[in-house]
Image (cartoon, rainbow, N blue to C red; front, side):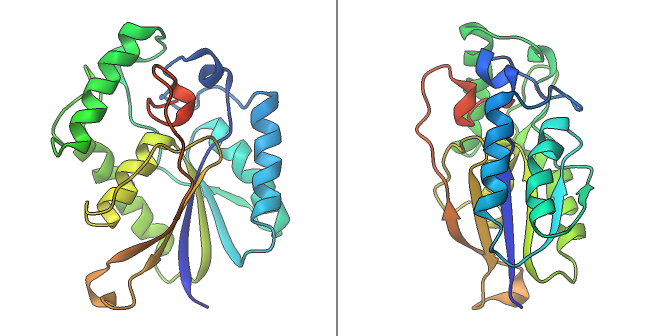
Length: 214
């Protein structure tokens, strides 16, 4: 059975709905809309060859993963290292000033400045240094579809790294998917190919589009 990495962003939370930066686990749970999105995600992946379901330490990620795991008779396995980009001094804040401060750093990452750092928080390198080894652990010897429920900004940074920072990445909506498969042409290099990306068009100042972390 061929391997695919299926990374899903969690469902909507009150922080998403209220444009609050919520990055420190365990964080807020899903709201009513988020719970419905999680159920829909479980139905979407029910017919896929899912062999394992993982989630970050955040409550919202575990709640989103639960219907996916249930559809396949699996348990949700919580894994460290795949939580959201830590916002540092911006944690728990909302409003345009806080979001603009985050987005300035976030945009710097996509222009190649991976050392840019959130005030008191993480750089893109920091996120990748914890996220990518976690992926190595869950993918070692795996086959079929390995589902990981994580967070918008962290998924985007990790996916870009796996794709060699050559593919265009996009904002990820709640319960949106990024699907990667090993590159058959260069398996010895650990290269990956993008199979699918659920893109979203960001709205100015809107954390629910997967731009700012929450």
